[in-house]
Amino acid sequence: MRAMYMANESFQSLCHNYQKCEEALEHWTQSKHADAPERQREYAELLKDLEFEIVQSLGEGF
Image (cartoon, rainbow, N blue to C red; front, top):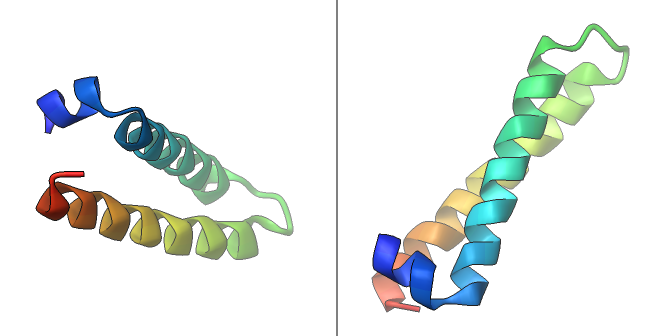
């Protein structure tokens, strides 16, 4: 995984997006804002999608 990350900009971007999404999910999970539950659901779904893309990419060797 590390070698793929170092060699492939698309995979780097995917991993970066996953990290940012995880940070946003954590933010909305802790937030007391009225929109927090909806944002939390959205980011949780996006995180699942990104996880799938990462696993798929690893299987394909990008």
